[in-house]
Image (cartoon, rainbow over all chains, first blue to last red; front, top):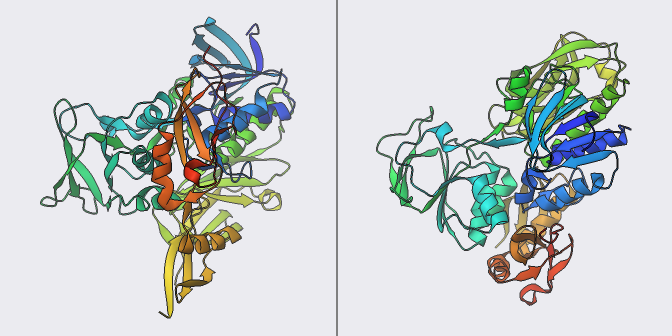
Length: 422
Length: 124
């Protein structure tokens, strides 16, 4: 940590940060710094001890810590990559000067030719979903409970109710069962599960845990400690239906009600944000609205697969390195990519078309559907068209637009998903 | 008996293919709906002898963290998963440990080892 200038400063040492660092190094960047606020790198993967990671990226099924280990092994003994743990970034300014604090070095100010934001995301909390009642002990986000059980060695409770069927909630339903706890119910406000199908099967059905779709919690009972909850069915506007209430005994309530990209630093820096992804708007290289500032992984949009996080971070790492070395193609046309019809979000939100390269688009749909057609058009020109057997909000869709189709299509693009006529 | 159809969700990867399994006199005779060969073998396995991977934690003495994440080397019989998880609760190892190290040999006599999921250095 004697340096003040770096080619690339990476904020966050999770899978995105480590993958970006490795990719920048592969591209030939000579001075790369990774800043991580936790006591070790690996990010949230360290507490995701279950398997199912890495099938795409490493062609092997790994646990979360196993995946983190692989990412770390790729960067750890490279003299061009410096990693600082226990280091909290406080501010990033327009000149790409990064201010951070660490117990070892105190207040540090360093400048990067480029910066990559890989801060990941955090959980929505109880406040964000406003359940009325007292504030007894025993209410946790699923991820906080996961960290307690898998890393700190504490059990948050014995009799559990889980609100929300996001993947972390489902994974915790199994985890608590394996630790000898009784999971009383999983409640989901939507009429469909928000987690991956494989997690429904392995984590809920396998353990005979009751799943209540179109249900929510209307009250939490207990003053010092949670003693139970009141559940109720909801109507199509997600409002509780009076008369459908019933009580469930529990000492612990876990909330798995969504993730929010962690973008305080991005907002302060003045990046243009997208209202639906809650992340910065990026081009296909994952460059944000400020030149030389890149972003990748869950800070851009919440992913369901870490493999895609790594893939996106490798793109950001590669182009941040090219930019830092002055090798980025300059002669490009900026084209907007708009999500329409049943596509809720699409990343990247714009592309800079130059000599031509294959562009991968990542989309999420608004609602679960069967047999849909995904199309990408530039004006009236069809660039891509494919029928998908299923589309779900919980599963990100990827589509590759080949370089030959990308070139010359400078009219704004639209990305559409529509149900196919029977 | 005769022919019977069953639906299964493949759990091999996040695609979660919906498998249609044709059973003739209780035996799997046809699998459709899978995108890859793993779906087919999953359907056969699930209908005859369902298996699951097990991941959990064990205590680690003198480690940088109090717990070590572990994973079964291969799948275990589904109906023995809870027994295996309970058996792991009593196990303690000593740091340092390397990813892939065997921490429990032949758990409950099922012929499967339990491995460390990550490196764990000694506490500094």
